Image 1 (cartoon, one colour):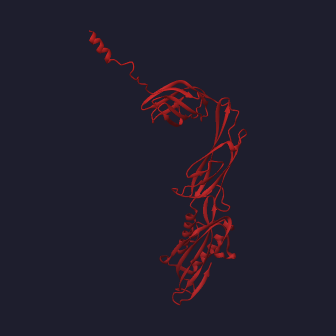
Image 2 (spheres, helix red, strand yellow):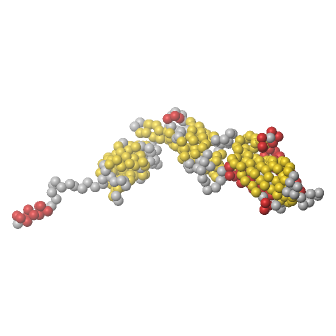
Length: 372
């Protein structure tokens, strides 16, 4: 019997054996914070793993970092209501709760949030309108912010949206994405301004967000496409004048550009037929921009065209005359066409077209300088 007693006591746990601790939460520092969120806290406990999550009063904490198996830091998120809250830690499929351990305190409401009174952009080109940008362009975003209690230099600024923002300040450089599914596109950058202030022992924060809508273009491509479409349609003799000029603005330069080009198209239809199979065209990039300015075609002061941008393309035409006295006469023309464009209602439209080149009679070899 004595031996059995000794054996039984040996099979039991020794008083010196380690006792499993398990996941647990023992304290939180500080023990109170604002309902507006933003309070950095430290949670003490045991067996915190790398997958640890933290919920306070039903709201998940952010910026959580596991410092060790016994310490976790995090930032409280905003909570609609004040009052005492439980802390719940979860790790490795287990959870532990510290009841009524944290108190959310609401601000008094006497401190109004910052006000973003204006947002504007300054592009990389002369007189570029605010709210207009091109793919891959770096534009400057400028915010006007007012706050009655806190100097604006002590506020924090965060820009969000596609692309990159440097620095995080009231004025930032926005690098618009280089690729978008299609253009023009509406792209939004959002500024969030945060004011941090104290009432008693609790630090609160006020936040204001305001979006800035940018109309993003691929202007080089868009204008070149419009110019190429115009020259291609001009070469198709079966198309009417209105069909040829469908991308021309009726209001740019008082409508003079479109009216001049209409006369050129009408004359071409009366005098000759184009051989569309011989038509060739190539771009001469880049487009030149001067919003609200002028484009001087071929450096000729007599061809100063009001415009926001202009492009040039080389053109090869072969025609057969049909007007009286020249029926059957053939002509080959090579030259450069200068096409201007304006931005109207967030859309590029064409304004003027000026051509300068050389025509040759393939039979006689006679060359003639031409311009229209």
